[in-house]
Image (cartoon, rainbow, N blue to C red; front, side):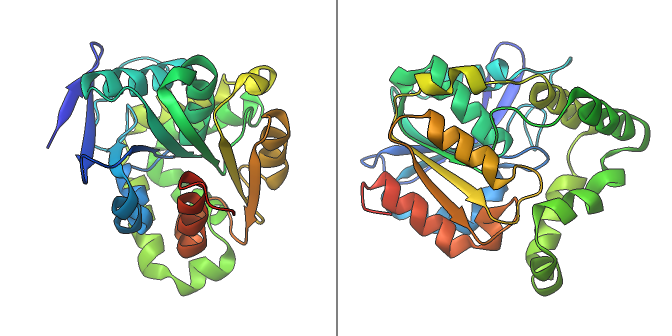
Amino acid sequence: MPYFDTGTGRLHYELEGDTALPVLVLSNSLGTTLDMWLPQFETFKEHFRILRYDTRGHGQSEVMPGSYTIAQLGGDVVALMDYLKIPRAHFCGLSMGGMTGIWLGVYAPERIDHLVLCNTSAAIGVPEMWNTRIKKVQQEGVASIIEDVLGRWFTADFLAHAPAQVDRVRTMLSNTSADGYVANCAAVRDMDQRAVLSRIVAPTLVIAGKHDKSTPPEHGELIARAIQGASYVELNAAHLSNWEVAQAFTQNVVDFLLNKNI
């Protein structure tokens, strides 16, 4: 199981696929792991060399002490790419992963080829909302918020008719460290990247979910309007659109990255 020492802690990653293909970095949402990309993995691997990693505090990555920042999460990606000698890559992130992608597009543009920002926001919620969630997880554990989170991540129809897939996501959530979850909540709470969106120059695709309660479509529309030339796609899904409408999600990303019309 490969790890990279950032200097402040270890990141777990997986780099797989044909070395002749361009690299696609995949970044997970709050409360999941690199396995959140399983619905896309086999198709993506046909076209790209895939670099997945567990965001710090998640999965097999170390729970580094203290509250995190989006700049730290973005810096982890740059450091990992340096370690693996990847000068430039496509990047696709969902939710918190998309927030990391925004930071990379602004502050490390020379490392990003195409950028895919999925079900994400440049600024989300108010501090009080995040502080309430942080307090609940600190006192009662991640288990105390799981069903509420799943209710925002998926539509009622998907929850009712795809129990096996929902259970896989539930397991990722339930195995997330409370300390790691809280530290990443702080990163999302303290983030506001709206003023710098226009500095992104990478070709960008923004994907939103029509029924997304966590990062509603207007959040994606704001991002797409601010980035010159950005494409915008709205899928018939809630927050984890890559699970709920996996085929449509995958096709849109592949077509964009291969410079096909979407």
